[in-house]
Image (cartoon, rainbow, N blue to C red; front, top):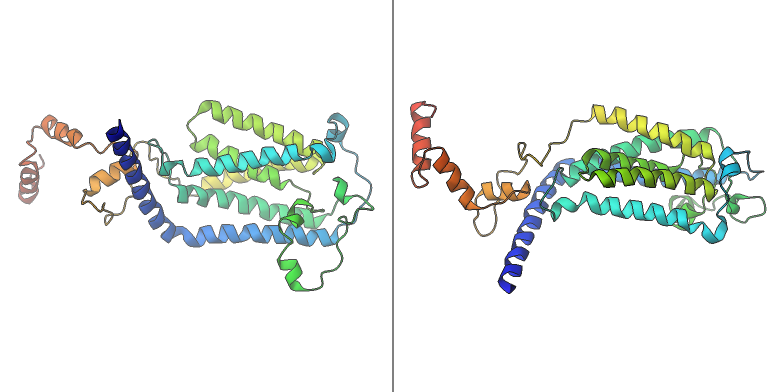
Length: 316
């Protein structure tokens, strides 16, 4: 039993090492795009903080969702944030599963490149929208009389650049149309719908997205229009950007390997074994022997026959 556990642990470690080597080389090629996407997350937070300085509290606008859904209030407002945190963390963990699991359909670096492209495009539209028209915040901390409803003019540029994270993000006002929580939720759900493998999880993800929409309205963090606009805007943005970006190779078939030529294991294993590990296949040498026998060549002189045929220009 101990020998079996040690052998499986060794295989798992080799998978992690090989996958890490591949992802690091992809990261070395794509790091500029990924860094740009990550930097824009800060710019988006900075823009949301800036519009808070422009926010002027006023009476809550008439809203159909508010008429239908009862308000959660301060005591139960955490429910919406808890569900969003669950969606966020579970999706991030899923994007790194190729490092561990046997079955894998994508490269983590390439997947996050697409995700950040979807997020940046949607967030750029969101910034333009909520700066165009500032609505009175419907949440309790944005009402008239609250200390957080209005921000005093900043004393220095540093105060603006630090965006008072995370307090300034949680208790922001004015960045309403359209919902940032729904941008992340819908981008994650759409990504899993395309690259995920579990049909039940895909269905569950859409159900959670609907529940998240209702909870956002019930917690009065956004007006219903903020959620509705997010649903069709994000879906359209993902649809069109996904058509423009080059499609990622499907690793489940192993037909489009991307393992660099210079990657080898420390124990001297050939590149073919590393390639099979990287694509989620077994690296059993018996499989190679079986293929040689099927092709009518012996394992000992197979390389000699192929090299001789290539030299003579004969296609065997």
